[in-house]
Image (cartoon, rainbow, N blue to C red; front, side, top):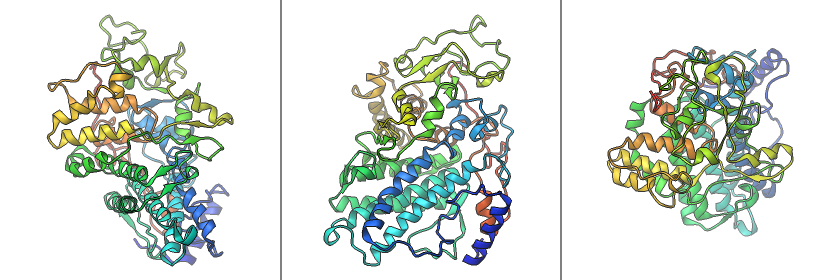
Length: 502
């Protein structure tokens, strides 16, 4: 499946432009193969390109025009009726919708933008590495060389890794790759390469002192040690979230996850969103803005185990003891009172399984970003890393260590949730995953989907990943294909989830 030469790529792109009537995303050429102009060659410009690469990558990962919203509803993490961004069709119950990977599909941009945005960020990082390894110095007498090098490898790793989480196959494009000889690799190989890239960033950050400028990370100037923690946290994320089935999750190296997590974030990664730094989070905005997303009933059931985990399909046949509408939940978890708010209306027309009367309000001030404000909002909580550590401990036989993390007095489960200690006889793994759903709600895009996928809990027929975008297949001269809603555990989930009330 080798790519064609540059001229053929250009010709194919011209065909796409005609077919799509000018609707093609301008970033569809992430390798810059169609740009006859020479890349910039002055250190200041390259430095700034490298510095903006993670912002651009983060914006597409958390953006509404990527697959973030789709994965939210596919995981029954968020519920939303509107058809925009393929939300409605990918959350239909039962799951019968294969992904429409045709050039005339209205919402094809959710995969195109994710793909092209990640590879554009990767191309920017590669450009910085090419210049650096070609002898260019950054800063006075090269004082910023190691900063640029570590940051570029970090972006390489996150870009490849996140694409590996979402697509069944993709390309591996390193700084020294032959761009006329690019081929598709299975997601496992792409994730493996992403971890090697992140380990290179971690290695550099562990040796050399530098400070990541606050504009590179949206107001959070980082020391090399703090940057190492961010890179290690992303490595823990990518390795643990990559499996498509429970059997694959059991087979990964959980000691490696444990190592990454134990060297991970000690403080939340919370970029300042808004025009100040140019960082945004459409995933959060459209999942919480009034009239848009609501909290899925499944999430409410995690905080009140007697509350129905599903809205009845006919709107009236409740599984409550008296068969009546349950009213307000009776939370044992205080976060149901602080982070979620009851709404009198159900918000959506008569598709009852999409109903919910709760909105999420913990980061409500971040909604003002769309109206000109600048607000810090986390996309990677330190608690998520601790929960990955707890899971790794549990999966490697240290249940006591996992419980110690869940029950730590200073942790949010105790401080914000007010919950009693978990005891050895309880379902520890399930409670770790539940805690992540509650505390990390609407932080990192895709987290709930990845957790549900790797534990065989996505509804039957829910897509496990997405196909290579049609435009990219056409450019590479490859036949079009898609991922079908067939509950075979290969293309789509063969599992399902059970609420605490069921």
